[in-house]
Length: 130
Length: 130
Length: 130
Image (cartoon, one colour):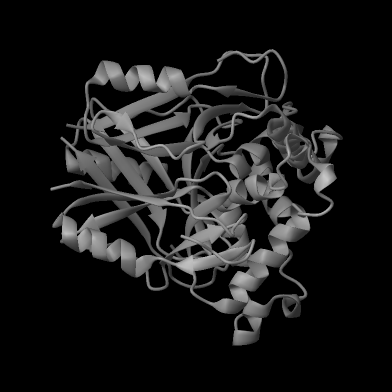
């Protein structure tokens, strides 16, 4: 992933489904997690207004500015808020696989949530089962 | 699940344990997740006062009213706050299974958390192992 | 775990890696969870300033004092805030195992987060796979 802004959400459902298809696994579990500690993988709605609301909410309770309010930023970083935001939104999701498909509810979509973007990051997808 | 109020918590531990018994699995993992994106599955204490505290806390940091403060609600919904509350409380739990039983700590109980109730919703339980 | 203060974070990565080594499992998933409901297991950065920022953030949105603000504390406990903090930081992590090693990103470290310390608590590590 390489999000051009500091914050952003990307629907990765089809990429994860493609991995499941390639694996051929029929019954099992799929773990999807951010490999970076200022990013999240989570399941929610693919609705632009909601993503805006998430951004406003997260910025309100863990504001980026002033960066000097965080001791982590004394190390030369400016992303302490991103570590907090990621913790609130979660690192990972685990999804059930039945008959070769994800057991999704009607609106469940998998998202990558970026809180310190403008650099390359990776997502891990691990599928286990038969 | 069909919670008669907007917010509510229900202890689902015995239903999940019944699924484990029926599966006959002795060693493995059990995933329990809400299939709806305004609901949570989480593990905590079965204590009414605590559930009240969770409600007050969630309502304070992500209030339902005024519904017009959320862009998601421009779509005709009034549940943007429920999407935020669910994200804070989590979508899922994964519980270890050893010798046919859940490896629970002394107070661990599984709850369904509803943040936009008064309609029918489903929970997914997936058990893998031997 | 026995944390001498009310709040604290301990890096448990090497203990979890030792369990993986002993298991001999090459491909699978590892679940690590707090067995107590006022504690977390989470993955983030091993940086002291960040842990300070987490403490300040959690104390700001779910303050310990006054303990009388929480109905849970009417039971004689004083740890309602700890139940909230644990919920925000998460109960568990699931980590992928490939070729006998954890699929960690560059900075991922596993932490035990204590929000009601000064007593003995346990962590569960369950590894499944081949």
